Length: 85
Image (cartoon, rainbow, N blue to C red; front, side, top):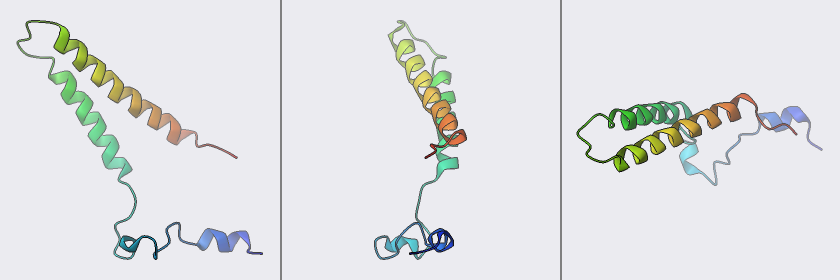
């Protein structure tokens, strides 16, 4: 039976299954993804400024911006409180 310290030292990714692990690019870019999400939400709300004749465009822009922000807040709450066993 393996001790818990041996399990902690095992790599999370098997190099045989993921060859990219050896040269350093494996995983996600969580901080960059969050920054891109906030910039996208700001850009969507900036697109409200313009010569819109109807309100249909504004409704879709606001809904998209609110959805992006809701996902970012949900992600922050999920990271703050990880699932416990």
